[in-house]
Amino acid sequence: MSGETQGTAASPEAPGTAAGAGVETTGAGEAAVPGDLAMTRLLWPFMLASAVGLVPFTIYSTFLVPIAHAADGGVAALGQLRGLGGLAALAVGTALAPLIDRVRKEWAAAGGLAVLAASAALGASGDFLLLAAFCLLVGAGTAVLNPALTAAAADRFDNDAASGRAATLITATQSLTALLAAPVVALPALWWGWQGDLWAVAALCAVLALYFLLRGRRRPDGGGAAEKAERPGYLESFRLLGALPGVVPLLLVAMLRTAAFMGYLAYLAAFYDERFGLGPGAFAIVWTLSGTSFFLGNLFAGRLLSAQRPRIGGERLMAVALLVALSALVGVFFAGSLYLALPLTVLVGAGHATVAACVTTLLVRRCGALRGTALSVNAAGMSFGVFVGAGLGGVGLALGGYPGTAAALGGLTLVALVLARLVARSAPAPVAD
Image (cartoon, rainbow, N blue to C red):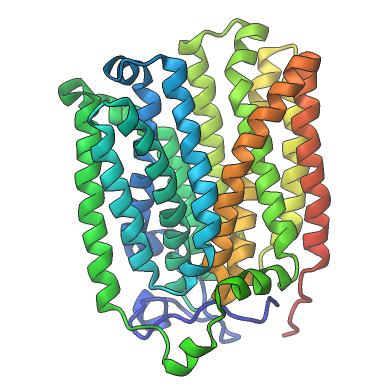
């Protein structure tokens, strides 16, 4: 969709208007983007729900050994159940993608939270089969929850720049949660155990589901009968999405970037251990360094792109970030010094975070009324990317050691860089003042 086409218009009560959100206008009459603090005050329920959505699998990964004991299963077997969540996210995210734009997004978020509440309650039992159901339901629930929250946050504003910034604030919250969630869930578990963590998550998800259900009932329907009649059908939504300029290569960039980054993370601890002798305790510092760089990269890239006239366009910034990420990723696996590997690790995280922010912003801006569908397909594609990256990284490691891993994952990033060029060529011409 052209850059002149606005996103979904904010509803009359949505605080995305100049009066409701304190949005100032520039001299040219354009709406300025609210500051991050103002947006956070408006979007905190969406950000909280987004953060909570990552907690169930964080608990599962953090307490995998005691969970395996409770289920009378091996750690390897319980670890493999985690993959069921990715498969469920891929299937549900793709199947339900067009429906995100056909229902109130608050209701879609409420449904996702309700599924997470049920999954956490099942997981707390410690039974092997119920833990398998837990993994499936968490994957399915987040496949609906995350794109619904991101699209709903973007819909709160009728300005493309503000909509894109709102969406990237949601993704920045997710990256911060991924960094902090493990120590956060570990502390209360000292008192009530991992089962208590899951019951607490179940209760919190249930409360948030009720909140979004009631919030959706209070908001206007978002369109009259004529507008509803013009909404595309299920298959038509996929066709229209594929016809938007640059959207398909943009979705492929997201999938390939995720594959490269997650494949890199899957073998990073083993690499640091073998090359530099860093055990789990010392490597935790490296992991925190990588996570912090990802969070800050996502946060600041989203802010940069939210300017009415950014110094660098999203398409160009995405290409530059992919080039940095490619160079740094290959450099890490060839680094012979810890003092070289650490800054390269920071660059990999920051580069991939910047690409992620660019993808989210460009999807929100280009897809307009189909942004919910696009974000859902994007989430499903990234779930598939997780499996592709871990698999290809392992193949590269088996065939050529860490240089082979660098070649496999670097190749994925290189293809993403070529596709980013196609996205840039499809960018609409800037509107003259």
